[in-house]
Amino acid sequence: MKTALLAAAVGSALLLAGCASPLANKSPDMAVRYVLKQNMAQSQYNFTGVMGFDQLLIKKGEATTNPELADITNEVARSLFIDFNGAIDLPGKQLEITPRLRFERRNIKGEVSVPLKLDLQKNAVLVDPAAIDLISKELRDHPGRFVRFALPKEFADKIPTDAIIKGLPEVLDQAYAQADKQAFTLEPLDDTARQLGASYQLRVALSQEQQSQLTLRMIDGLARIVRDEAERRGKPEEAQQAMAIAQVIKSLSNNEQKGFFSESTIHLYADRSARLIGLRERIDLSTPEFDARAYATMKMSNFGKPVFAYPLTEAQIIDFDKLPKPAWLNSVDKPESAEE
Image (tube, rainbow, N blue to C red; front, side):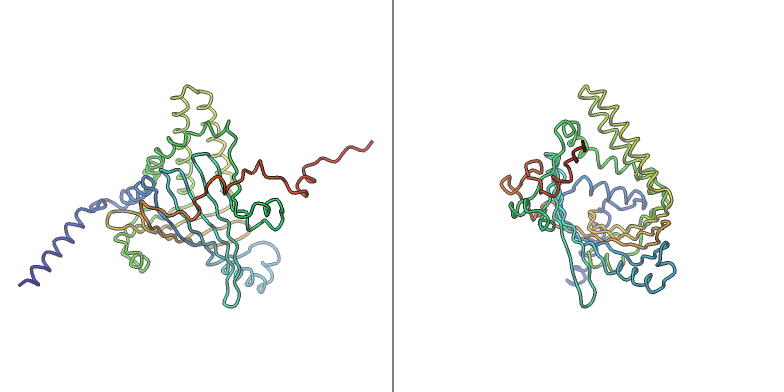
């Protein structure tokens, strides 16, 4: 009797939990929008992932007539991986990521990593230069210090960081709101979902045109935030500049996509509270030079309490403009004197 009552209680609890889920009764497109918007609004977590190639076929040059070279090229690509891990705290205006280029086969392995930090408080990027300090004694003279590349103050002051961070979730949501609803599906849980402990698996399949439209809508959304903030501050000229820059970026984006074909399929994994805990993406890409099938996976952890591997102090940073240039770079910059 007690066992039956316990089973009934557990069953009722599970049923109630399902009903209480934020994704209950939502269509696939609305579920995707909810998950992505919440992820952007609560961007405080650690992440880890990998990107690589399943296939790379060269369409120009000797590889097109030499099957052996084409096979070697494909195998080299399949042996290259970009691992990455890091932490994000968008409300705290900081992002940390360490991409690691890795070449690995059964009896050989090599890798190089470049830790990066994005400081949105000071609109600066910080880089650990240890991977390239062999070519610069000036870098070796400051072991363990990150090099900071900061935007000039006249540009940094025009970036409304707080407004952008606040408006990003809505920009992302509105961009996806205009996408074809047929691009979204709710799928049965696969092995990745079970490994992550996901309760929901959502699929987003985008053609090249859909990807392009999504990108352009996000550019427009961000430009409007910058424009509105400039107008609020009584800077109409900056508002006009923001919209002009957006048009240039959109034009460049359109030009870059000419001559190639791309399709993307993303699987989003969410827990019962609709929190994004992982993703898996497949990208099919075709250009005049090559055909490729690539993939990317990522999982998130430590929600609300991200752990940063490089909590830097000012003593551990050197500004790029205060770093002496290596002699070889000075000789490159120095114009040759005109002959008499």
